[in-house]
Image (cartoon, rainbow, N blue to C red; front, side):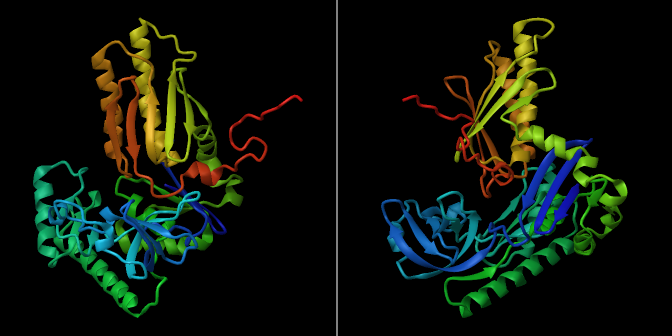
Length: 413
């Protein structure tokens, strides 16, 4: 993992065998809103949309949908949804948590399903159940940590055991729960005293999240090029994973006569990853186009002619494209609806293999990603959870001449 800091900016990149597989960035440690908890005031209730707008002090009112007001445990929800007017009224004060940042003209989306992430688990003060990460595959281990969770939770509390909880002892998991429980109590105390709108809790910045969520035993090295952040990073690693403290290393750009990202070829990989046309190693290519809520990806054979027959050429191109698309979705942090136009395949088993490959990658994605399958037109549909503005919009500046279309209309009169 590489962490590049410059003033307010922090960028983190994760490499596997020298190849970029994850990329995150924040303009400042206080810029992220997802996970923040606010005491807000209901400004408007819209029964026709089953939603309400809540002033949480961000300028634009936040959007609260009825599903985010009902009990988070499905078994405890009513068989038929009530009208949102029965749950909230204009002027009512409400504690909410940001689940999606403001994007474009839209305000933040908020929820009353509170979640506080720790190193090993996620604490939910009112969920009433224990969940286990689907990435923990051993049934005996799933049962073990589920039973620990049941012993640790109190009354209406809920716990989701993260992938990192696999193999951890009850003492470590219990300490995580108690820390988060006390954090929630402090949020409740601030809520009782605060006047809406007010911020009650701020989620950890990118540096802490990177150490908490990304640093694992199988990570060989962590390089940091910002001396001002080194002591903070070292303290975080000592707090969460002290046995990995020796893996943190300082990169001196002046001594190396190169930037951290240039030294590990991250810069050139990022430049290639954010192009509209991406070349595949086999000679094929991807054409990538994004709107606010929809991403369309077209797969082409381009210069790849294969070695045996057309079906084999198409299949190999599509399989490589599936691998590359999965990687780029993570690097670009794409969210929303994604439609992929793979090259047409005659063999149904080949179609199933391409979908299975993409589904396998989706399971490894730390952001929830769901592959729905093929449409009648032969397009593959999937969705990926969208919580923050993606990296492309943060890195790229819209061209004032063409407005981002890449074309300029000329009218002869």
